[in-house]
Length: 458
Image (cartoon, rainbow, N blue to C red):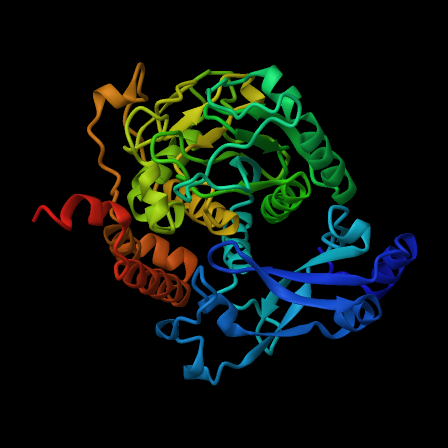
């Protein structure tokens, strides 16, 4: 896709005369939006020259601290790189400042205009190039779960579900798939829908998830995986912004409540050949799918343990992996089975696809898609064969084997030759160094639970 042109920028500003400033956004390793804000008159310059940001934007931990062990900080003089606009991402942000704000996604390049290796969007782009060489184009859809929270904390300083805008009652029940719960929060959901339409984000469905205050919004299938992830990161920003306007907070933490379901990010993937045929569909209509589908599943299962550091990128991520809450804890697959890690949904042969159910809502969507596509390419290249699909309850048939250790997950990623080769060794070094430093810092904090359990009794 050609870059955003100055003519396109001028046409956008002419259509939106009230917009007086533009947020230039880039997704860091955690999926946190970083960047700069410019007045509208500077947009033409950004289209022509880009904007400078330090390479260390990809060395930042969740607190915004530069992790020097990545090698992207003072070791290179904290030097700048140019960020270029992403075509199709210039759009209004109607929930901000009465519509006077716009936003534009950026991606970082080297001085010679080649992709910057540590930019997650460029990491995904690299995987797409590998698949395109095989004549394959992935089709992706992202499902995102989140909680709405009351901005008022409990007397103990803990989070709590919000009060319904209509009934005034605080949510206390699961009410999975409840239309009544959607009605209670209809004003919020309608504003999300309107803002998404304004931004051209392809919302598909919204549903009440299985905990008080928890919802899921699904994006439609897209045959441009980069655009699918662009939509996911922008939808997260949108939901958080609209929630604040309604007096709530929205969180995509993987496990905000210890005893309730966690927030996941599920990804549906199919694959098209050069003629537009879904290569996961069996030519003879076999409901078990094609040989390529089985190879893709086998690759995703084989690299799933080493992918855990991407799927569960922080301390809280691993609290989500508990039995009984529909979170996969073993590399398994099956047909129309929500107890497995890779579900092959029911439906027509032409729509055959894989649903990946492991990652938390705190994942960086670009990196998640990158490891999934790398895993699929690995399975196809090596002609791997998966084990038999699981029927029945996988939780009762298999002991948990995916690591619940952040430390171990990083070791597995670092030791994975297929993922090192696919993602790039320099990128894996930056990611692992960044996450290890954040883990070390987290280990220095003593929790209230530890005081309550151990202070007087050991």
